[in-house]
Amino acid sequence: MTKHKRKDSPKPGTRGTPGTNIHKATTRRPTWDEYFLKITREVAQRSTCLRRQVGALLVLDKRILATGYNGAPKGLAHCLDIGCLREKLGIPPGERQELCRGLHAEMNALLQAASYGIQIGGATLYTTNHPCITCAKMLINCGVRRIVALDDYPDGLSKDILKEAGVRVEIVKPHKS
Image (cartoon, rainbow, N blue to C red; front, top):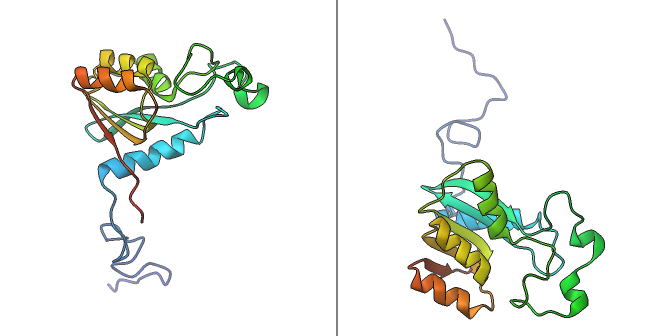
């Protein structure tokens, strides 16, 4: 019996053939941190905050446990639709966080994990911005051991308590591909 190949089937070693290298010779495979930070940037695009679009992922053993982005509680009007209270009151970043309709991305990731009974002790938080003091305290109590952020945030107390708690924090700049 003669085996017939379909005319439209890919040649061995090309895209579409299982078990082959689909990367071009010049393409570099991202590290795990780069991979998760890229996803974090995608998550941030769901943000409804007018000031800062933040995304967060909780990851354990290279598996995404939960995601979060900053925005109003579910069922409430978004700042995109009604405006920003903090802007109206002239409140600078890192101050008077209680005067905001939105939850932070880190809070929403923690709440998502809790809602589904997902344990996050020992996890790494990937985020677009360094956590504020309120989120830092929550992350410490939930057992997050490492934070990888794309950008810093003006909150010295947050940095101090994370260091005191032994949480490793890394601010990384994305690799240019």
